[in-house]
Amino acid sequence: MRETEAPVLAASYFDGTHGRAQPVELQRVDEDLLLRGDGFERRIPAGELQWPEPGLHGVRVLHLARGGAIQCADGAAWDTWARASGHRPGLAVRMQGSWRWVLASVATLVVLAVALQRWGLPALAGLVVAATPVSVDLVIGETALASLDRLMLRPSELPPARQAALRTAFRRVAAAQPPGTVPHWQLEFRGSRIGPNAFALPGGTIIMTDELATMFRDDEPVLMGVLAHELGHVEHRHGLRLLVQGAVLSGVAAVVFGDFSSWFAAAPAALGHASYSRAAEREADQASARMLNAAGISPLVMLRFFEQMHRRRGDSAGSDGDSAWSGISIASHPADAERIRLFRAAAGSR
Ligand SMILES: [Zn+2]
Image (cartoon, rainbow, N blue to C red; front, side, top):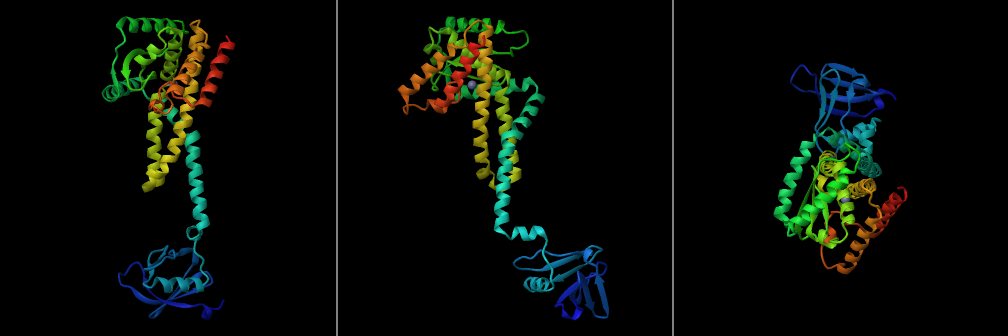
Protein backbone atom coordinates (compact mmCIF):
# COMPACT_ATOMS: atom_id res chain seq x y z
CA MET A 1 0.00 0.00 0.00
CA ARG A 2 1.45 3.36 -0.96
CA GLU A 3 1.23 6.16 1.56
CA THR A 4 -0.98 8.33 -0.57
CA GLU A 5 -3.66 5.64 -0.80
CA ALA A 6 -4.22 5.30 2.97
CA PRO A 7 -6.98 7.55 4.38
CA VAL A 8 -6.04 10.53 6.50
CA LEU A 9 -7.65 11.68 9.76
CA ALA A 10 -7.30 14.96 11.63
CA ALA A 11 -6.47 14.48 15.31
CA SER A 12 -4.68 16.03 18.28
CA TYR A 13 -1.23 14.91 19.40
CA PHE A 14 0.09 15.14 22.93
CA ASP A 15 3.80 14.43 22.87
CA GLY A 16 3.95 13.52 26.54
CA THR A 17 6.25 16.38 27.59
CA HIS A 18 4.31 19.50 26.56
CA GLY A 19 0.81 19.89 27.90
CA ARG A 20 -0.60 21.47 24.75
CA ALA A 21 -2.18 19.43 21.96
CA GLN A 22 -0.78 19.83 18.44
CA PRO A 23 -3.05 19.34 15.43
CA VAL A 24 -1.84 16.43 13.30
CA GLU A 25 -2.90 14.32 10.36
CA LEU A 26 -2.82 10.57 10.88
CA GLN A 27 -2.08 8.04 8.22
CA ARG A 28 -1.45 4.35 8.61
CA VAL A 29 1.64 3.18 6.74
CA ASP A 30 1.92 -0.57 6.64
CA GLU A 31 1.34 -1.37 10.33
CA ASP A 32 2.98 1.88 11.54
CA LEU A 33 1.37 5.25 12.14
CA LEU A 34 2.56 8.39 10.42
CA LEU A 35 1.95 11.75 12.17
CA ARG A 36 2.20 14.96 10.16
CA GLY A 37 2.05 18.17 12.18
CA ASP A 38 3.09 21.78 11.70
CA GLY A 39 6.72 21.42 10.68
CA PHE A 40 7.30 17.88 11.94
CA GLU A 41 6.69 14.30 10.93
CA ARG A 42 6.92 11.19 13.13
CA ARG A 43 6.57 7.56 12.23
CA ILE A 44 5.52 5.45 15.23
CA PRO A 45 6.22 1.70 14.97
CA ALA A 46 3.23 -0.65 15.19
CA GLY A 47 4.54 -2.17 18.43
CA GLU A 48 4.19 1.15 20.26
CA LEU A 49 0.56 1.75 19.32
CA GLN A 50 -2.15 1.02 21.88
CA TRP A 51 -5.27 1.27 19.75
CA PRO A 52 -8.49 2.36 21.45
CA GLU A 53 -11.46 0.02 21.37
CA PRO A 54 -14.29 0.90 19.04
CA GLY A 55 -17.39 2.05 20.87
CA LEU A 56 -20.60 3.94 20.35
CA HIS A 57 -19.76 7.55 21.02
CA GLY A 58 -17.10 9.74 22.41
CA VAL A 59 -13.44 10.48 22.24
CA ARG A 60 -10.88 7.93 21.01
CA VAL A 61 -7.45 8.01 22.61
CA LEU A 62 -4.55 6.06 21.17
CA HIS A 63 -1.81 5.75 23.77
CA LEU A 64 1.81 5.57 22.71
CA ALA A 65 4.04 3.11 24.55
CA ARG A 66 6.89 5.62 24.87
CA GLY A 67 4.62 8.34 26.28
CA GLY A 68 2.16 10.66 24.67
CA ALA A 69 -1.19 10.06 23.08
CA ILE A 70 -3.27 10.81 20.05
CA GLN A 71 -6.81 11.97 20.56
CA CYS A 72 -9.79 12.30 18.28
CA ALA A 73 -13.03 13.87 19.49
CA ASP A 74 -15.13 12.23 16.77
CA GLY A 75 -15.31 8.55 17.72
CA ALA A 76 -17.32 7.55 14.67
CA ALA A 77 -14.87 9.25 12.29
CA TRP A 78 -11.98 7.53 14.06
CA ASP A 79 -13.59 4.10 13.77
CA THR A 80 -14.33 4.62 10.08
CA TRP A 81 -10.76 5.79 9.45
CA ALA A 82 -9.28 2.91 11.47
CA ARG A 83 -11.35 0.35 9.56
CA ALA A 84 -10.54 1.90 6.20
CA SER A 85 -6.86 1.91 7.16
CA GLY A 86 -7.05 -1.85 7.66
CA HIS A 87 -6.81 -1.81 11.46
CA ARG A 88 -8.45 -4.85 13.06
CA PRO A 89 -9.66 -4.55 16.64
CA GLY A 90 -8.17 -6.96 19.18
CA LEU A 91 -9.57 -10.43 19.81
CA ALA A 92 -11.31 -9.46 23.06
CA VAL A 93 -13.13 -6.60 21.33
CA ARG A 94 -14.30 -8.79 18.49
CA MET A 95 -15.52 -11.37 21.03
CA GLN A 96 -17.44 -8.76 23.00
CA GLY A 97 -19.32 -7.76 19.91
CA SER A 98 -20.46 -11.26 19.11
CA TRP A 99 -23.51 -12.75 20.81
CA ARG A 100 -22.14 -16.24 20.16
CA TRP A 101 -19.13 -15.41 22.29
CA VAL A 102 -21.33 -13.90 24.97
CA LEU A 103 -23.44 -17.05 25.09
CA ALA A 104 -20.35 -19.27 25.14
CA SER A 105 -18.87 -17.21 27.99
CA VAL A 106 -22.03 -17.45 30.05
CA ALA A 107 -22.23 -21.19 29.42
CA THR A 108 -18.59 -21.59 30.46
CA LEU A 109 -19.24 -19.64 33.67
CA VAL A 110 -22.23 -21.79 34.52
CA VAL A 111 -20.24 -24.99 33.89
CA LEU A 112 -17.40 -23.65 36.05
CA ALA A 113 -19.80 -22.69 38.83
CA VAL A 114 -21.42 -26.13 38.80
CA ALA A 115 -18.01 -27.87 38.76
CA LEU A 116 -16.81 -25.71 41.63
CA GLN A 117 -19.99 -26.51 43.48
CA ARG A 118 -19.78 -30.26 42.88
CA TRP A 119 -16.10 -30.95 43.48
CA GLY A 120 -14.23 -27.82 44.53
CA LEU A 121 -16.56 -26.69 47.27
CA PRO A 122 -16.74 -29.93 49.30
CA ALA A 123 -12.94 -30.20 49.14
CA LEU A 124 -12.50 -26.59 50.22
CA ALA A 125 -15.09 -26.91 52.99
CA GLY A 126 -13.32 -30.06 54.17
CA LEU A 127 -10.06 -28.11 54.51
CA VAL A 128 -11.71 -25.27 56.39
CA VAL A 129 -13.55 -27.67 58.71
CA ALA A 130 -10.34 -29.61 59.41
CA ALA A 131 -8.58 -26.36 60.32
CA THR A 132 -11.40 -25.18 62.62
CA PRO A 133 -11.07 -26.11 66.31
CA VAL A 134 -13.97 -28.14 67.76
CA SER A 135 -14.62 -25.34 70.25
CA VAL A 136 -16.09 -23.37 67.32
CA ASP A 137 -18.62 -26.16 66.71
CA LEU A 138 -19.63 -25.92 70.38
CA VAL A 139 -20.28 -22.19 70.22
CA ILE A 140 -22.27 -22.52 66.99
CA GLY A 141 -24.27 -25.39 68.47
CA GLU A 142 -25.15 -23.45 71.62
CA THR A 143 -26.18 -20.40 69.61
CA ALA A 144 -28.29 -22.52 67.27
CA LEU A 145 -30.04 -24.27 70.14
CA ALA A 146 -30.85 -20.96 71.82
CA SER A 147 -32.60 -19.70 68.70
CA LEU A 148 -34.33 -23.03 68.03
CA ASP A 149 -35.65 -22.96 71.60
CA ARG A 150 -37.00 -19.49 70.95
CA LEU A 151 -38.48 -20.24 67.54
CA MET A 152 -39.68 -23.80 67.28
CA LEU A 153 -38.96 -25.99 70.30
CA ARG A 154 -40.71 -26.33 73.65
CA PRO A 155 -39.47 -27.80 76.93
CA SER A 156 -39.81 -31.58 76.94
CA GLU A 157 -42.77 -33.21 78.66
CA LEU A 158 -41.08 -36.61 78.69
CA PRO A 159 -40.77 -37.94 82.27
CA PRO A 160 -37.22 -37.40 83.58
CA ALA A 161 -36.90 -41.13 84.30
CA ARG A 162 -37.62 -41.94 80.64
CA GLN A 163 -35.07 -39.32 79.51
CA ALA A 164 -32.47 -40.80 81.87
CA ALA A 165 -33.18 -44.33 80.63
CA LEU A 166 -32.62 -43.32 76.99
CA ARG A 167 -29.38 -41.51 77.90
CA THR A 168 -28.15 -44.62 79.73
CA ALA A 169 -29.08 -46.88 76.83
CA PHE A 170 -27.22 -44.73 74.32
CA ARG A 171 -24.24 -44.45 76.67
CA ARG A 172 -24.05 -48.26 76.49
CA VAL A 173 -24.07 -48.11 72.66
CA ALA A 174 -21.28 -45.49 72.73
CA ALA A 175 -19.25 -47.52 75.23
CA ALA A 176 -19.35 -50.51 72.85
CA GLN A 177 -17.50 -48.55 70.13
CA PRO A 178 -13.76 -48.87 69.53
CA PRO A 179 -11.86 -46.45 71.81
CA GLY A 180 -11.40 -42.95 70.45
CA THR A 181 -14.08 -43.23 67.74
CA VAL A 182 -16.96 -41.56 69.59
CA PRO A 183 -17.11 -37.75 69.55
CA HIS A 184 -18.35 -35.72 72.50
CA TRP A 185 -22.16 -35.87 72.68
CA GLN A 186 -25.04 -34.94 74.89
CA LEU A 187 -28.67 -35.92 74.52
CA GLU A 188 -31.50 -33.42 75.03
CA PHE A 189 -35.25 -33.77 74.66
CA ARG A 190 -37.69 -31.16 73.42
CA GLY A 191 -41.34 -30.80 72.58
CA SER A 192 -41.81 -29.37 69.10
CA ARG A 193 -43.91 -28.48 66.13
CA ILE A 194 -41.68 -30.64 63.92
CA GLY A 195 -43.23 -33.98 64.75
CA PRO A 196 -41.22 -37.12 65.49
CA ASN A 197 -37.67 -36.14 64.71
CA ALA A 198 -34.09 -35.91 65.85
CA PHE A 199 -31.20 -33.72 64.83
CA ALA A 200 -27.63 -33.03 65.81
CA LEU A 201 -26.12 -29.60 66.37
CA PRO A 202 -22.47 -28.75 65.74
CA GLY A 203 -20.52 -29.60 68.90
CA GLY A 204 -22.43 -32.81 69.68
CA THR A 205 -25.78 -31.83 71.19
CA ILE A 206 -28.40 -34.24 69.88
CA ILE A 207 -32.04 -33.21 70.17
CA MET A 208 -34.74 -35.87 70.17
CA THR A 209 -38.35 -34.72 70.08
CA ASP A 210 -40.85 -36.08 72.57
CA GLU A 211 -42.92 -37.23 69.60
CA LEU A 212 -40.12 -39.50 68.34
CA ALA A 213 -39.44 -40.94 71.80
CA THR A 214 -43.16 -41.61 72.18
CA MET A 215 -43.59 -43.07 68.70
CA PHE A 216 -40.96 -45.72 69.47
CA ARG A 217 -41.91 -46.03 73.15
CA ASP A 218 -41.60 -49.82 72.97
CA ASP A 219 -38.78 -50.05 70.46
CA GLU A 220 -35.63 -48.71 72.08
CA PRO A 221 -33.24 -50.27 69.49
CA VAL A 222 -34.76 -48.03 66.78
CA LEU A 223 -34.11 -44.95 68.91
CA MET A 224 -30.52 -46.14 69.37
CA GLY A 225 -30.16 -46.38 65.58
CA VAL A 226 -31.53 -42.85 65.17
CA LEU A 227 -29.20 -41.47 67.85
CA ALA A 228 -26.24 -43.27 66.24
CA HIS A 229 -27.19 -41.65 62.91
CA GLU A 230 -27.14 -38.24 64.59
CA LEU A 231 -23.82 -39.05 66.23
CA GLY A 232 -22.55 -39.85 62.72
CA HIS A 233 -23.40 -36.26 61.70
CA VAL A 234 -21.46 -35.03 64.74
CA GLU A 235 -18.50 -37.30 63.95
CA HIS A 236 -18.27 -35.93 60.39
CA ARG A 237 -19.00 -32.35 61.54
CA HIS A 238 -21.70 -32.05 58.90
CA GLY A 239 -23.29 -29.03 60.56
CA LEU A 240 -20.14 -26.94 60.36
CA ARG A 241 -19.51 -28.18 56.81
CA LEU A 242 -22.91 -26.98 55.70
CA LEU A 243 -22.31 -23.55 57.22
CA VAL A 244 -18.84 -23.25 55.65
CA GLN A 245 -20.13 -24.31 52.23
CA GLY A 246 -22.92 -21.77 52.44
CA ALA A 247 -20.50 -19.01 53.40
CA VAL A 248 -17.95 -19.90 50.71
CA LEU A 249 -20.66 -20.15 48.11
CA SER A 250 -22.16 -16.74 48.76
CA GLY A 251 -18.63 -15.25 48.75
CA VAL A 252 -17.74 -16.85 45.43
CA ALA A 253 -21.07 -15.91 43.92
CA ALA A 254 -20.56 -12.28 44.94
CA VAL A 255 -17.12 -12.21 43.29
CA VAL A 256 -18.06 -14.09 40.12
CA PHE A 257 -21.51 -12.71 39.49
CA GLY A 258 -21.42 -9.31 41.16
CA ASP A 259 -24.84 -7.72 41.10
CA PHE A 260 -26.47 -10.84 39.72
CA SER A 261 -25.46 -12.89 42.73
CA SER A 262 -28.96 -13.29 44.08
CA TRP A 263 -30.18 -14.71 40.80
CA PHE A 264 -27.17 -16.83 39.84
CA ALA A 265 -26.27 -18.07 43.31
CA ALA A 266 -29.68 -19.57 43.90
CA ALA A 267 -29.35 -22.39 41.37
CA PRO A 268 -25.94 -23.82 42.30
CA ALA A 269 -26.70 -23.31 46.00
CA ALA A 270 -29.83 -25.41 45.72
CA LEU A 271 -27.95 -28.05 43.72
CA GLY A 272 -25.11 -28.29 46.21
CA HIS A 273 -27.39 -28.43 49.18
CA ALA A 274 -29.30 -31.39 47.78
CA SER A 275 -26.28 -33.44 46.74
CA TYR A 276 -24.37 -32.54 49.90
CA SER A 277 -27.31 -33.60 52.04
CA ARG A 278 -27.58 -36.99 50.35
CA ALA A 279 -23.88 -37.66 50.81
CA ALA A 280 -24.04 -36.54 54.43
CA GLU A 281 -27.09 -38.70 55.14
CA ARG A 282 -25.30 -41.71 53.65
CA GLU A 283 -22.27 -41.09 55.87
CA ALA A 284 -24.49 -40.77 58.94
CA ASP A 285 -26.38 -43.97 58.03
CA GLN A 286 -23.07 -45.81 57.61
CA ALA A 287 -21.96 -44.59 61.03
CA SER A 288 -25.29 -45.68 62.50
CA ALA A 289 -25.08 -49.19 61.02
CA ARG A 290 -21.46 -49.52 62.20
CA MET A 291 -22.30 -48.41 65.76
CA LEU A 292 -25.38 -50.66 65.98
CA ASN A 293 -23.31 -53.64 64.86
CA ALA A 294 -20.63 -52.86 67.42
CA ALA A 295 -23.28 -52.61 70.15
CA GLY A 296 -24.76 -55.99 69.18
CA ILE A 297 -27.96 -54.49 67.70
CA SER A 298 -28.93 -55.53 64.16
CA PRO A 299 -28.98 -52.60 61.71
CA LEU A 300 -32.22 -54.15 60.45
CA VAL A 301 -34.02 -52.37 63.31
CA MET A 302 -33.82 -49.24 61.17
CA LEU A 303 -36.22 -50.84 58.69
CA ARG A 304 -38.88 -50.43 61.37
CA PHE A 305 -38.00 -46.73 61.56
CA PHE A 306 -38.42 -46.18 57.81
CA GLU A 307 -41.62 -48.26 57.80
CA GLN A 308 -43.16 -46.18 60.61
CA MET A 309 -42.11 -42.91 59.01
CA HIS A 310 -43.47 -44.02 55.67
CA ARG A 311 -46.79 -44.90 57.26
CA ARG A 312 -46.90 -41.59 59.07
CA ARG A 313 -46.17 -39.67 55.87
CA GLY A 314 -48.96 -41.60 54.18
CA ASP A 315 -51.40 -40.70 56.96
CA SER A 316 -50.51 -37.05 57.05
CA ALA A 317 -49.68 -36.45 53.39
CA GLY A 318 -50.39 -32.84 52.57
CA SER A 319 -51.81 -32.13 55.99
CA ASP A 320 -48.81 -30.81 57.91
CA GLY A 321 -45.52 -29.15 57.06
CA ASP A 322 -43.48 -31.92 58.59
CA SER A 323 -41.51 -32.84 55.51
CA ALA A 324 -40.07 -29.34 55.19
CA TRP A 325 -38.02 -29.91 58.30
CA SER A 326 -34.67 -31.54 57.60
CA GLY A 327 -34.02 -33.72 60.59
CA ILE A 328 -33.65 -37.46 60.26
CA SER A 329 -37.16 -38.18 59.06
CA ILE A 330 -37.12 -36.18 55.85
CA ALA A 331 -36.49 -38.36 52.85
CA SER A 332 -38.17 -38.80 49.52
CA HIS A 333 -39.31 -42.35 48.91
CA PRO A 334 -36.55 -43.46 46.47
CA ALA A 335 -34.01 -42.13 48.99
CA ASP A 336 -35.71 -44.26 51.66
CA ALA A 337 -35.20 -47.34 49.47
CA GLU A 338 -31.50 -46.54 49.13
CA ARG A 339 -31.15 -46.08 52.88
CA ILE A 340 -32.99 -49.32 53.60
CA ARG A 341 -30.56 -51.15 51.26
CA LEU A 342 -27.64 -49.69 53.22
CA PHE A 343 -28.93 -50.99 56.59
CA ARG A 344 -29.79 -54.38 55.06
CA ALA A 345 -26.29 -54.70 53.62
CA ALA A 346 -24.74 -53.70 56.95
CA ALA A 347 -26.83 -56.36 58.73
CA GLY A 348 -25.74 -58.97 56.18
CA SER A 349 -22.07 -58.21 56.67
CA ARG A 350 -22.09 -58.80 60.40
ZN1 LIG B 1 -29.33 -37.21 59.05
